[in-house]
Amino acid sequence: MANSRSAVFLDRDGVLSVERSYVLRPEDLELVPGAGRALRVLNNGSVRSVVVSNQSAVARGLMTEEELATVHGRLEDLLAAEGAFLDAAYYCPNLLGARVERFARDDSCRKPRTGMLEQAARDLGIDLAASYMIGDQATDIEFAKRGGLTAVLVLSGKGRETQAIQIERGLEIDHVAVDVEAAVSWILNHLENR
Image: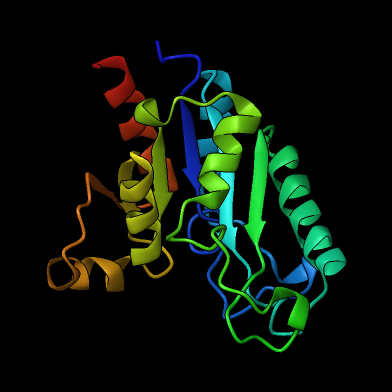
């Protein structure tokens, strides 16, 4: 089927979990319907699944890195309860001019810059040209294009707003899906037909 070095990169909030202004506590994180099934399909298809998420709440002083880790642990637990897992997760807490000095920088890890993508490719041996990004915001689509990924916009989270501004912003979206489950289905078909 797929190139064994293919991966699907996913934004967290609005794609895998319900969009909220900030998810600061584990109990605030809730999976979108179908997220567990979508990841289980990727897991069964031997396609890596990797979260890449900007998390400026750390730089803003709203939560610590340790608290972010507990939120991520909740994500992993909810997915495991549905028989699914992530191969890796990368978060960028940095934000230029933020309250917490240690994170008050515009670092190359923050989407749409490709630092998280490059790190994942090195860590996991991923073929970026054979990989995909599922996101709900313009920064996700720009990130995908800068990194040479196929860009899939989901209409969950902020996806409908992003779709409405795609022409104005010149976003090159390769596919639009109603949700993460439909996005994964399209990706697997796309991989089969490559």
